[in-house]
Image 1: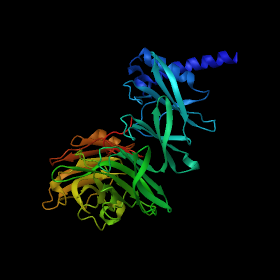
Image 2: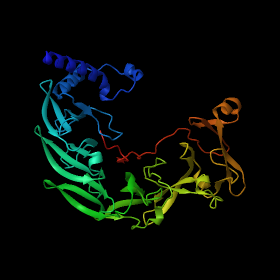
Image 3: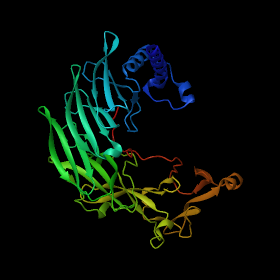
Image 4: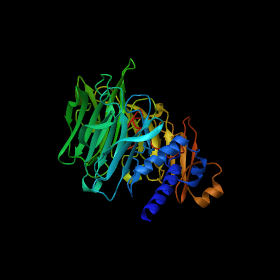
Length: 443
């Protein structure tokens, strides 16, 4: 009787899993479910086989990376031009919580070829990249114990002839897979912060059967945290040659103050381009770096009061957000500027670059009520923002265009200058923790 009941539960759960894995992505609402196409017979069979292999009480899991939307990952791990199916699952009540299974098509049937145990209680990160440069993707998985231990642990697994080998184990805060040393091969860079103890950036590359540390750069451990890390092109020279690097946005002092580091590699040595000088990139608020103008180069953000607002109280100032690029030496060059309201969650788009240091906010303006953007030299109004109650907006917003809405307010705008208004609350590219490359790096 118990066996029949267990089989019935497994069968029902397998049917449910078939719907959940439509397209191998998570369906969060009935409308989305109705729009999901029918699964192929092959995928229906695979989902049933996967579920039949799960222990009682186990569930398939994704990593915590926002880009990881799949429960089943199809990857050609052995280079035979046929994808294997890789799944991770958790058994919360067991001593070992996280596990992985790999399935392969054998004579037209999905067959489990191997499995292995993970570590910790949470799958923080999962990527499939060729790290040993053999032309086949490796499995890069990051785990954490969450409250038990704040340190994450990274493993690199290689799949060979139906078995799994652990090639690397390394504690980390974040990590980046890229060609930092410019030798046309992938390398792995570990960013590690143990507050008030040790902080470093270290780059590893696979050579002659093992991972070798290319270089290690000690960092300041007396900081609060790394609130954003992004990797990609950080500079382009006059001839158009790009330089790759890692930008680390760092909180300090236990408050809102922060600064940014750019890490590059030159002649096999890691280097902080600002030489430990925090003043160049210091900001009063934690602004995330990212490619804000979509030119392929990462910008570093900062906060500046509009001209004429220096002596107002900090919470009264309608700050401008300024984005700059590394100049290839030890400084920054201006790229873009915008008004952004962090409290209410909207932004006004980017001003024309030629308006830098020429546009401000009229000092008679009041945050959360009315803002008038004017040219410094002429006083000409180029934009206005006004806050309406819901009732006011319904009655008298005819001359205003919709910008954003909160629970109890509607924000309207007028513009007179030639620039685009962005009325969507959006995240900047490459702002996804723990890390995301400029080029997408996860499955």
